[in-house]
Image (cartoon, rainbow, N blue to C red):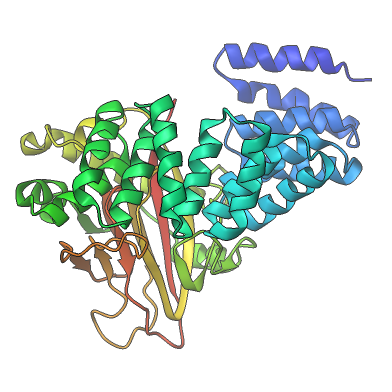
Length: 429
């Protein structure tokens, strides 16, 4: 019989040596010998998650829960993983099951509420977050999430005191500062929003939400020089064809996208309307998306090198914080006729981009453009935005700072959908 303690020690030794993947062969052997042992499945899933192999980890957690539906730690881990992969509906099901099974645990109530918040189901999120706060009154993230839900529901008179109480307890928390500031912006109080945004950027110079909010405030307040610097489109956008030396089988990639089992119509909590979007793609060796990931990595290296070599950009607040060590995440979007994406940013990224695999059969140029600079509907600003439109071209990339608000105009094709793959460059370690 496999000694689980010895396996744990082996995994820990590999992790200390900086190569947790070296533990997989022994774990694979153990699971093959005893496929119905829940403890082995859970341990292997934890290693797979550390390696960013989310699909394989979820397969182990699915099997574990099929064997033992009462395995609450596995269900909680599966829910967290699903949420991290933007599979919010499935994550919510697990968190709600945990609420039913263990109603005394604030974590399940809190996570259910936060998933509902990400799905923009603000009214439904509020009772879960209130209950979580009753069970854990000192939990600042829950208090902030409740404030965001109330703000999203239009109850600013209840939201603002909560935001302010969080900031009294954590005055330098960038997330608390930016959430408060965006609520102020949404209430038309740009002058008051500027100070917490600047404080957030001072606390975390890489905070993309702070940079996005500062752009909106500067535009509302008529600070033209700051707007010019933050949305210097000619310098900060990079719209280029895929280089010939970075080969890519576009037809195979198209087939892989359209066959992806995770494509979901208008996924909750995402910006896509009138189209399908996948969860995060598996970019590991053996995946049909591996070569795409390699091509993007090659492009990212070139872009980062060019930005750092430009003397005029070295003092730019975004360029200064680009990561030396980074990882990639990517997803695909398939837009049908009328499909679009609402204005949004990529707060977890640093450098973002999109690859147009197939621009579809749009009837005329300028239809379905990628447009930068417009605020989301939740932030009803008054000043005209500083915008820039980029027409999609097949086999081209468009790179942009992750703090850039961007959206797409409705796609007007009828016979062939528009297929794109978006990606974020994120700090590693």
